[in-house]
Image 1 (cartoon, one colour):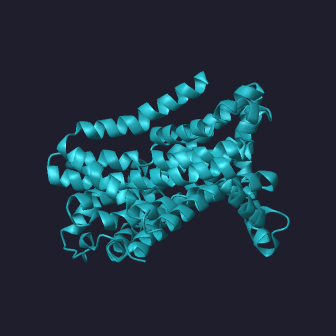
Image 2: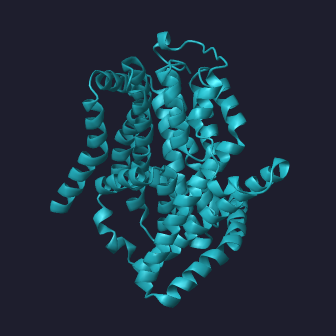
Image 3: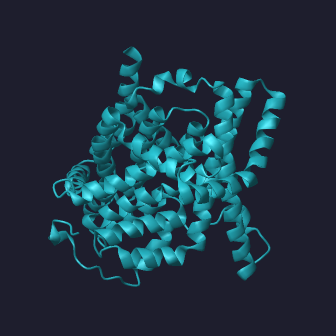
Length: 418
């Protein structure tokens, strides 16, 4: 599979100067309390890896707390309470705004997985999951502003950031109508959950169910303790709301912690993957974006890392493009991990939501890259937007405000009137 516009695709030559730039943009800092530990060497590494394992435990527990809290707060009436979000356009906007606020699509999707396990209808959740992909692109656009002092560098940086926007908007433009009309992603997610958690899935379901039950057995005591404490001092509705708030706060903290620690622990491997894969074709770029995002558990970090390198001219827009697509796929891993925090019917519901996010990104990548007339559209759009932004920074402001504020506000306002 090859990309068009071969004049943009030149073999990359890496110099020693590349290394400091990557390290600078990776923001390689441990959480403050980790730096104060009176240990070093191999012992420190072991402790840091154990801290990541503990953080994953907290993540799964937090998602379970949200699921339980959502069920308690809604009293089994989630569909009626969330009737305002049954309009798919509103759900899409909620996903965009939630991700803009948290600056993490992993946080948004993990919360949605927990809410689906707690009773949120899947049809309401799917547009939110699609919106999360769009909302996560804002950070890389903000990173591109660091090159605003040089017109050519800013053009390349803003184009590299915008290609992620354009790709995700194209994906939504294709799959949102399909989902609205035919429930395509809901059918695929339901099928996958059936073979991995259902009673008729055979060996695959047995393995996944056993793994899920094992994880649940470990994480349930923590979730049960939070629920028992909340229920002991608050009424059911307020207890449920408190549980949701606690779960969201834990997810926000723990995803940031995991991302920070993995960037430190895996920096050498991340750099090697980045250097070896980008520029060797779209499949290699997609895989490297996927792998690095799984490593650092943050598509925002992955795409933001690429923007300064594009600004410097070390990578072309056609080389950055598949890398950001891979980041989209890699970020689905967090929701899949979160889905293992449930058992029984809740496990099936959670896995269905996580599978929707996974297959949406997989199928979108395959469809857009395999259809020749679709493949160059994000690059064309990003190049156009980059040229506009380089001419006048007001276009950048208008793009950010329009995509993340004005359009979502109009959608919510119109839906409220209708």
